[in-house]
Length: 137
Image (tube, rainbow, N blue to C red; front, side, top):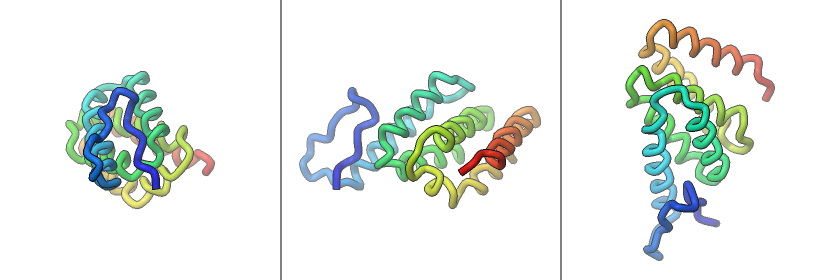
């Protein structure tokens, strides 16, 4: 079993030879969660970068999805729409395990986030949901 790829080439490599795969996954989750802090507005470059990181770390998909779900639970309501756009980008652009990993919590994550946003963002949430209904696969 290979260890997860770091978030970026500049991310520190674990130097402790006793680092377990679980610890490496936790590190990726924490680093990705920290990166999510920058996603406070609808920024295509940030969403694209975070989507690329998710693609490059597909072997850590569980940790990345966990980071996104946690951020959506904890985020300011004004920051939820960009997080939904990131989720949408990963689901539509990254092949691999992401749809299956998002699936168990997506209804609750979407619903609880939808309940917290203003009416303008509610309309945008529903537009994203409509694309999911019509998106093949």
